[in-house]
Image 1 (cartoon, rainbow, N blue to C red):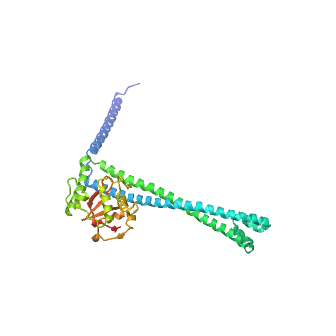
Image 2: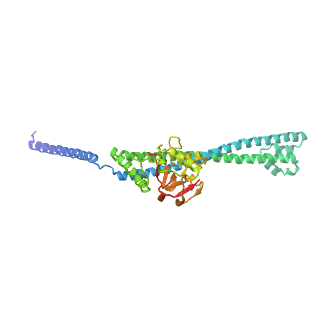
Image 3: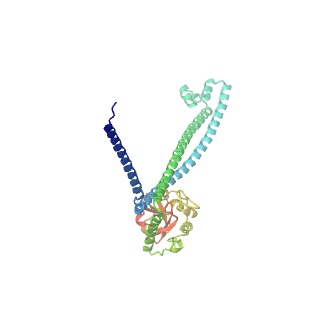
Length: 358
C-alpha cells in the first residue's frame, strides 16, 4: 500500500483552518458577552424627573384604589348589618310559622274528634291554601278554622320572603368580601411598583425627589405669605386657624394633633391615617359620624364654593380619591400618600372638585 503525504498535509491544513475558525468564533462570542456586560454596567442612570412622575402617578393610583377599598369596606359593614337583621327576621318568622302550625294542629285535633275528616285533610296538608282551592271547601270552614289556615299561609309566605332576603344578603357578603380582597391586592401592587422604581435610584437621587416635593410645597406656602420653618413642617399654631364655631374647632384641633403621623392606606387611627380616615376621625370627635370614604363624605353636609370656604370645610380632589380639611388662608391639613405624613399644605384650590360644610 502506498502512502500519500501530500494528502495528509492537505487534511491537516483543513483541520488547522477549522480549529482557527472555531477559536475565532469563540473569541468573538466572549468579546460580545464582555461588551454586553460593560454596556449593562454603563447603562445610564434612571432619569430622576421621570421616576418622580411615575412614582407620583402610582401613588395617585394607589390612593384611588384605597378609596375604592374604603368604600367596599363601608358597604361590607352595611351588608353585615343587613345580614344580621335578615337572620333575626328569619328566626322570628320561623317561630311564628311554628306557632301557626301548632294552632292549626289543635284545630285538626278538634276536627278529628268532630268527625269532619274532609276538613281534617286540609289542616294536615303541607299547603293548606292550595288544598282549599282544589277542594272548594273554603266556604264550609268555620271562621276560626279559616283564620287558622290564613295565619299559617301568611306566616309561611313571609318566612319564604325573609329566607330569600337572607340568601341575597349572604351572596352580597361573599361578593363584597371578594371585592375587598381584590382591591387590597391592587393597592399593594401599586405600592410595590412604586418601591421598585425608587429602588433603581441611589440615595442621592431619592433625596433629590424628596427635595423637589418639599421645594414645591415651600414655594406655594411662601406665595401665600406663610413663613415656613426650616424643617418644612408647619404647625397649625404657625398659621393661626380661626374656626367659625366650636364644633369645627374641635374637629380642627383633633386633626392638628395628628400632624406628623404617617399615612397608612385604610388607616383610621390612632397611630396612622389615610386621607378620609383622618377626616372621619376628626369630625367624629366633634360628634359627626362620617363613613370612611371620601366620595361618601362628599354627600354629607352642604356644598360650598371655593370663594366661601371656612376652616373645617372638607375639600375633595382627584375624582374624590383624595381629600383634606380647610384651615383658612389657602391652607389645608391632609394625609397625603404612602411614605408621607399628615401635614399642613397649600389647599390646591385650583384642583378642587368639591367642598362640603358639615
